[in-house]
Amino acid sequence: MSQKIQAIRGMNDILPEQSIWWQWVEENIIALASAYGYQEIRPPVVEKTELFKRSIGEVTDIVEKEMYTFEDRNGDSLTLRPEGTAGCVRAVLEGGLIHNQSQRLWYRGPMFRHERPQQGRYRQFYQLGMEAFGFAGPDIDAELILITANLWQRLGLTSGVTLQLNSLGDPESRARYREQLVAYYQSHHAALDDDSRRRLESNPLRILDSKNRQMVEINRNAPQFFDHLDHGSREHFDQLCRHLERCGIAYEINPRLVRGLDYYSKTVFEWVTDRLGAQGTICAGGRYDGLIPQLGGRESAAVGFALGMERLILLLQQTEEAPPLARSPHAYLLLLGDAAQQQGVAIAEKLRQQLPRLRLTLHCGGGSLKSQFKQADRRGAEVALILGDDEVASATIGFKPLRERREQQQLTMSQLHSQLQQLIEGEK
Ligand code: HAM
Image (cartoon, rainbow, N blue to C red):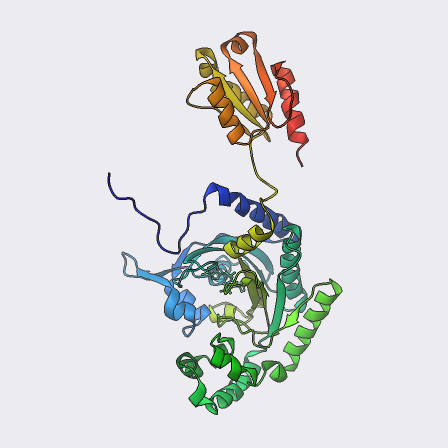
């Protein structure tokens, strides 16, 4: 036997036992997206490397260390998308979607970052993101946060997640703050770790985000951006807070929240939990008004978020035993004898045509009555339908409920139809 080929480290299979969780979460998100008027967009997984360098920023962990970049057969430098915002902006510009109009969009799909894998951190992971273009006010920032809060509620996540907020101001106030920050760190130069010294030149705001204990100490006394915010950003932020308060959404202001991507200005936010160890951010986003002109478009406001599907599901699995939406079959059709084997496929198909919401699994491959019943039970079917040669001759079918103590009945096809209809309609 040849050796088995294994999956790539940090890139996981989502097996059926897990995928029911994914479907449950995605169904809720899709319902919410349409409830709030967001439309789906599906940009490709691969983009020109330049797109990510220009948007996420050259001096970020993602661009410096984590991208899957390769040369294709034409010699072009391409990259597997490490996040969804850049591709979404490129697509709306290319498709003329924000020319004199606003847009509310959502997307889902795999992202790729060459990080060190651990629980909640993978090399291929899935994001669900929403982006709104052409809205400058804090109302849309609030709306996006409310969508996520609404999602947690629908999924039964009523505690254990905290909303953190900050404002990164406009580019001018950020430049002024940056100068103050550099002066502060220079006065503590001897105590800085290597990473922070490097960032001091290139991206000093990121030092605030450092998890290194010695840096956490130094950061405690660093000047706070909040004290240097421009008037407009301050006003925007205050109004956002008022919207959230009116909707009963609790938040914490975290002045050290800077995010790992360079495109943000004004509002930034993260939903964090302490139940997932080090990878506790389940959802993150903010405003990025400067990105569209940076990618060649006309000045336009933009704000969005992305949630990490794996992290959200890990968190849900800590509190729920099974997703409420386990999609087991309504019925499992058992076939006994030659005539039944021959007719079974067509009979099952006819039932599916007549009852489009019916979930019917057909037994394939023969076997004894006992083994077929076992299969029906293992698949979680509500009822077993038994088709033997006698039933084929008399145009009837055996109907045996599997989840309650009830005798098997012999039904005509029209009786079967109404029994199955009742099963479907009785479902929540
Ligand atoms: P991000 O903070 O880089 O932001 O990622 C968003 C979320 O994706 C994280 O909060 C986390 O839940 C999940 N995530 C990130 N990296 C990994 C990983 N290696 N393994 C598992 N999950 C991960 C963005 O990507 C921005 N594009 C968000 C955004 C949209 N901002 C505005 N619009």
